Structures are given as C-alpha cells and as structure tokens.
Length: 88
Image 1 (cartoon, one colour):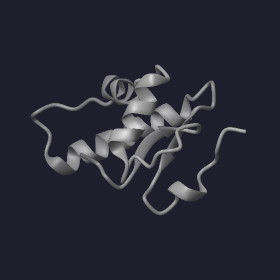
Image 2 (tube, rainbow, N blue to C red):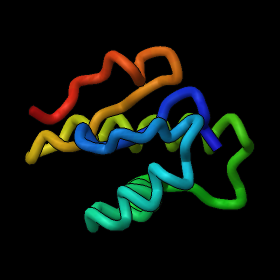
Image 3 (cartoon, rainbow, N blue to C red):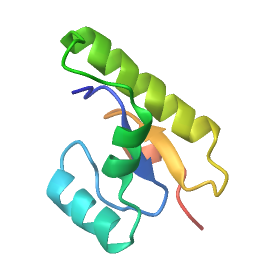
Image 4 (cartoon, rainbow, N blue to C red):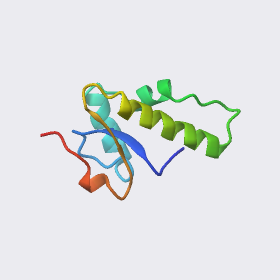
C-alpha cells in the first residue's frame, strides 16, 4: 500500500497516517466511503509488483483530486497533513 500519500476529505479532522481507525470511522459516518471510491478508481491486481501497485494508487489519488467537482478530496502526505486546506 502506498503510505507516502493518502486521500482524505477537507473536513476530516483525523490524520489517516496516525489515526486511521478514527479517520475511517469519520469517513464512513459521513457517507464518503473514500477507501471504496479509491479502490474503484485504482486499477490494481495481483499481477502488479508492490511498487507498481503504489504507483497506481498514487495515480488514482491524483485522478480523484483532479476531477474533484465538489472540492472535498485532497491528497495529503505525513508532512503536510497539519497544513492541508480545511473546510471553512
């Protein structure tokens, strides 16, 4: 799994790198189902190496953020999570 970047929503206060259970509970409670969305966009298979899978997940995150009509999704890293854009 790609742990250099993750997909989250601007209103989720939990860090998906260090507070994944809380992050996931919030995401599910809000009805976003971000992990499911990412798994539908990412084209992964058992035939991919770990590096290829990580690259594909990163590509899918970029695609989701690019076509982010409602502005909810953002790509975060462990370093920029605290300074990410937040919902006003």
